[in-house]
Amino acid sequence: MPAGGDYQRRFQRRWPRLRDPHVRALAWLLDAPDLMASDAPCWENRIATLGPVSDEVAAWLNRLQDDPELNAALQAHMAHQPSARLGRYAEKLLGFYLVRQRQLVAANLQVRNTGATRETLGEFDFLVKRPHVDAGAGLEHWEFATKFYLLEQAPSSSGAGVEADAFVGPNLADSLGRKMRKIMSQQLMLSRHPAAAAVLPEPVAAAQALVKGWLFYRDGMPAAAPAIGIAHDHCRGFWCDAAQLQARTFPEDASFVVMPRLEWLAPLRAEAGHALALPALLTELQARFAVEEAPVMVAVCRPSDEGEVVEAERGFIVPDGWQQRAAQTVRHAVVRV
Image (cartoon, rainbow, N blue to C red; front, side, top):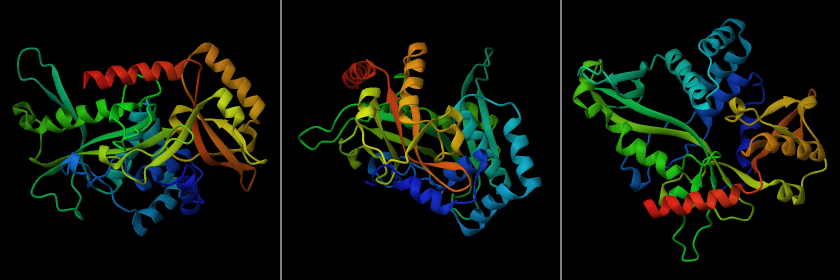
């Protein structure tokens, strides 16, 4: 398992010219390791992967940064019906890419009951055709997710690893286990419903989950066991409370940026004026926790050229009491399963 910060260094080396936040986020979506291992037996070949970024796509991403007309098309696409939801933001970025690659057949295609109520039964996130991928005679159905989970429970001493439900979302309303069970048992089954035939332009040959994201570990906690289907090279960070953050050792030139939610995808690149010293960050965290007792994503940054800072590692800083609530959530989830 790579240490936290390894992916950030690779990303900065691979994409040194990318500064536009949308372009950086799209580069991360296309380039980042998958969160779930496509070859893990537990997923039964139902994990989609985009594969390595080709030289042609890499050149296109750099043009997306530099070409005014192409960049304007991206900005207009992202400005249309904007959303504060990170998942929706990521969907729009991926949709822009799939359209430009001429692979998108449909996005957010709803399936409704044919009865009098016309209730929505589900939605196909993406229906795609990729000429370079043999998907048989039909379409690929992707359920797309970008997720951020904190591992609350340490692996057992028996070496059995952790339950997927021990990875909980910052708001404690979701877990990795719950999300993957829903995708596998419900969402990927949508094309089999009789009502789906009315909206599908072609039969679905493959239904898979495309999952990107970051997992966060307490300092010193071992990596998740591969048995629960997590990719070994997934993007990772740390989590701790404010007191533990203050006790951590950072380089002398380190600074900190509180990351807006829509900038959680790619490693951060920001003007140096946006960065805080540790005492100022602790004051900012105290003010935020007084308003809402929710974890805050923070980028630990190093100085870069041209008056900028770039992310060296990232972590969730949790308010007092969050860990106890998370532990209770995990205990209840494991009992239910």
